[in-house]
Length: 197
Image (cartoon, rainbow, N blue to C red; front, side, top):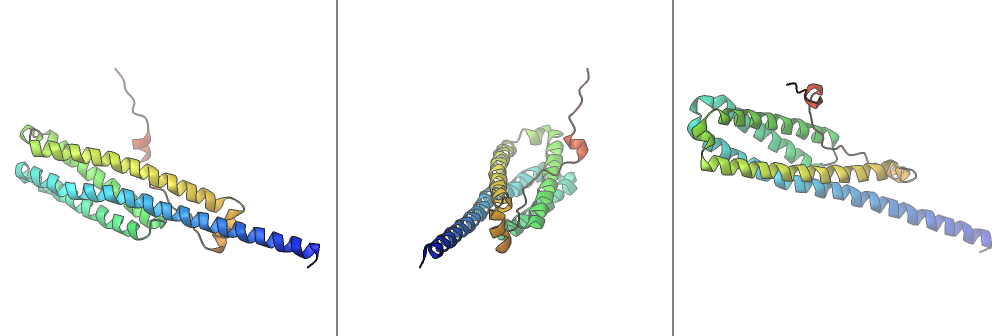
């Protein structure tokens, strides 16, 4: 082989090694997204397991608030099913969006339940309810941290898949952008509250 052939062979080898490294990086980052969602899933399961206990304690005191209790359980079941869908494919934007919407519904239902609880001093004073509420609050905090880790993994993956020249490998092997878990607040909820004295 002459010098030109060796140079061409070296260039081809370098490009092949770079392509392999870029592909492996994208695979690793895609797997990190799956792992990050698995961490969210653990906390969501914990929350989904706490909610029926919370509703059962409240049911003893709130016989006439059946609609509120049923709404919480229905929202929990919807969110749980949506989480299962994302668990199967954590990169699917539609599934992540459905989970975000279901979690928003669940949050609203839980907020309504807690507002009802506030109106009943004997229920508010119940030790079991207080413990479950505290455990649910701690779990919500863990979900928040796990969501942040998920969104960080999605950001890293999307950046790697969209930056040149790795985007060529991403297109070639059909690595699609992943969706972040976002808050589903309305514009009114995002607006800063005004306080006047």
